[in-house]
Image 1 (cartoon, rainbow, N blue to C red):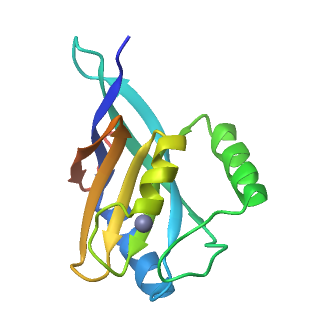
Image 2: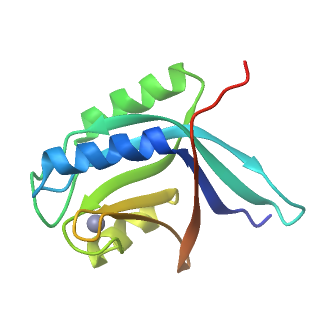
Length: 149
Ligand SMILES: [Zn+2]
Protein backbone atom coordinates (compact mmCIF):
# COMPACT_ATOMS: atom_id res chain seq x y z
CA UNK A 1 0.00 0.00 0.00
CA UNK A 2 1.19 3.45 -0.88
CA UNK A 3 1.05 5.90 2.01
CA UNK A 4 1.84 9.53 1.80
CA UNK A 5 1.42 12.41 4.17
CA UNK A 6 0.08 15.26 2.12
CA UNK A 7 -0.92 17.68 4.84
CA UNK A 8 0.29 18.63 8.28
CA UNK A 9 -2.00 20.55 10.62
CA UNK A 10 -0.54 22.65 13.39
CA UNK A 11 -2.05 25.37 15.56
CA UNK A 12 -1.01 29.02 15.37
CA UNK A 13 0.09 28.73 19.01
CA UNK A 14 2.47 25.91 18.15
CA UNK A 15 3.82 27.80 15.15
CA UNK A 16 4.44 30.87 17.31
CA UNK A 17 6.25 28.69 19.84
CA UNK A 18 8.50 27.21 17.15
CA UNK A 19 9.21 30.71 15.86
CA UNK A 20 10.23 31.78 19.38
CA UNK A 21 12.53 28.76 19.76
CA UNK A 22 14.15 29.55 16.39
CA UNK A 23 14.73 33.18 17.38
CA UNK A 24 16.13 32.23 20.79
CA UNK A 25 18.70 29.87 19.26
CA UNK A 26 19.59 32.16 16.35
CA UNK A 27 22.10 32.17 14.66
CA UNK A 28 22.44 28.44 15.48
CA UNK A 29 19.79 26.12 14.05
CA UNK A 30 17.02 25.22 16.50
CA UNK A 31 15.36 21.82 16.44
CA UNK A 32 12.33 20.10 17.94
CA UNK A 33 10.20 17.01 17.55
CA UNK A 34 6.56 17.40 16.60
CA UNK A 35 4.32 14.93 18.42
CA UNK A 36 0.85 14.02 17.32
CA UNK A 37 -0.96 11.47 15.21
CA UNK A 38 -1.76 10.68 11.60
CA UNK A 39 -5.04 9.74 9.98
CA UNK A 40 -6.18 8.73 6.52
CA UNK A 41 -8.02 11.36 4.54
CA UNK A 42 -9.05 9.67 1.31
CA UNK A 43 -9.37 6.41 -0.55
CA UNK A 44 -5.85 6.78 -1.97
CA UNK A 45 -4.57 6.24 1.57
CA UNK A 46 -3.24 9.75 1.79
CA UNK A 47 -2.57 10.86 5.32
CA UNK A 48 -2.82 14.00 7.40
CA UNK A 49 -0.40 14.49 10.28
CA UNK A 50 -1.78 16.49 13.20
CA UNK A 51 0.63 18.15 15.58
CA UNK A 52 -0.50 18.00 19.23
CA UNK A 53 2.66 19.14 20.92
CA UNK A 54 6.23 20.32 20.55
CA UNK A 55 9.26 18.76 22.20
CA UNK A 56 12.21 21.18 21.92
CA UNK A 57 15.52 19.40 21.39
CA UNK A 58 19.13 20.48 21.84
CA UNK A 59 21.18 20.98 18.68
CA UNK A 60 24.27 18.93 19.55
CA UNK A 61 26.13 20.59 16.67
CA UNK A 62 25.41 24.14 17.95
CA UNK A 63 25.84 25.02 14.30
CA UNK A 64 24.54 27.79 12.07
CA UNK A 65 24.40 25.34 9.14
CA UNK A 66 23.37 21.97 10.55
CA UNK A 67 21.58 20.36 13.46
CA UNK A 68 22.05 17.03 15.16
CA UNK A 69 20.06 15.48 17.97
CA UNK A 70 22.05 13.41 20.44
CA UNK A 71 20.89 9.74 20.27
CA UNK A 72 20.30 9.62 24.05
CA UNK A 73 18.18 12.78 23.92
CA UNK A 74 16.27 11.25 21.04
CA UNK A 75 15.59 7.97 22.88
CA UNK A 76 14.24 9.75 25.96
CA UNK A 77 12.10 12.06 23.82
CA UNK A 78 10.60 9.09 21.94
CA UNK A 79 9.83 7.37 25.26
CA UNK A 80 8.20 10.52 26.59
CA UNK A 81 6.10 10.92 23.43
CA UNK A 82 4.93 7.30 23.33
CA UNK A 83 4.02 7.50 27.04
CA UNK A 84 1.53 10.19 25.96
CA UNK A 85 0.17 7.75 23.33
CA UNK A 86 1.43 10.00 20.56
CA UNK A 87 3.96 9.51 17.80
CA UNK A 88 6.64 11.63 16.19
CA UNK A 89 4.88 13.09 13.16
CA UNK A 90 7.50 15.63 12.25
CA UNK A 91 10.94 17.05 12.77
CA UNK A 92 11.31 20.80 13.09
CA UNK A 93 14.43 22.85 12.57
CA UNK A 94 15.30 26.40 11.63
CA UNK A 95 17.42 27.87 8.89
CA UNK A 96 19.07 31.28 8.73
CA UNK A 97 18.67 30.79 4.97
CA UNK A 98 15.47 29.95 3.08
CA UNK A 99 13.03 27.31 4.38
CA UNK A 100 14.17 24.64 1.95
CA UNK A 101 15.95 21.35 2.83
CA UNK A 102 19.74 21.46 2.52
CA UNK A 103 21.72 18.60 1.00
CA UNK A 104 22.48 17.34 4.53
CA UNK A 105 18.78 17.54 5.38
CA UNK A 106 17.94 15.50 2.28
CA UNK A 107 20.28 12.74 3.43
CA UNK A 108 18.60 12.57 6.87
CA UNK A 109 15.12 12.91 5.41
CA UNK A 110 15.73 9.62 3.65
CA UNK A 111 16.39 7.99 7.03
CA UNK A 112 13.51 9.78 8.77
CA UNK A 113 10.45 9.64 6.48
CA UNK A 114 8.31 12.00 8.53
CA UNK A 115 7.34 15.58 7.74
CA UNK A 116 10.23 18.00 7.97
CA UNK A 117 9.05 21.44 9.03
CA UNK A 118 11.53 24.26 8.46
CA UNK A 119 11.32 27.83 9.72
CA UNK A 120 13.39 30.48 8.01
CA UNK A 121 14.67 33.26 10.27
CA UNK A 122 15.53 35.05 7.00
CA UNK A 123 12.06 35.16 5.43
CA UNK A 124 10.11 34.50 8.68
CA UNK A 125 8.17 31.70 7.05
CA UNK A 126 7.49 28.00 7.49
CA UNK A 127 7.59 25.26 4.87
CA UNK A 128 7.08 21.51 5.18
CA UNK A 129 8.52 18.68 3.10
CA UNK A 130 8.66 14.93 3.00
CA UNK A 131 11.09 12.85 1.00
CA UNK A 132 9.44 9.98 -0.79
CA UNK A 133 11.83 9.14 -3.63
CA UNK A 134 11.50 12.78 -4.50
CA UNK A 135 11.13 15.93 -2.46
CA UNK A 136 7.45 16.66 -1.90
CA UNK A 137 6.09 19.88 -0.46
CA UNK A 138 3.57 19.12 2.28
CA UNK A 139 0.53 21.39 2.78
CA UNK A 140 0.80 23.30 6.00
CA UNK A 141 -2.58 23.95 7.58
CA UNK A 142 -2.87 26.07 10.62
CA UNK A 143 -5.71 27.14 12.86
CA UNK A 144 -6.17 28.51 16.34
CA UNK A 145 -6.34 26.04 19.20
CA UNK A 146 -10.03 25.60 19.87
CA UNK A 147 -11.29 22.50 21.56
CA UNK A 148 -14.99 21.87 21.91
CA UNK A 149 -14.50 19.61 24.93
ZN1 LIG B 1 18.32 22.18 7.40
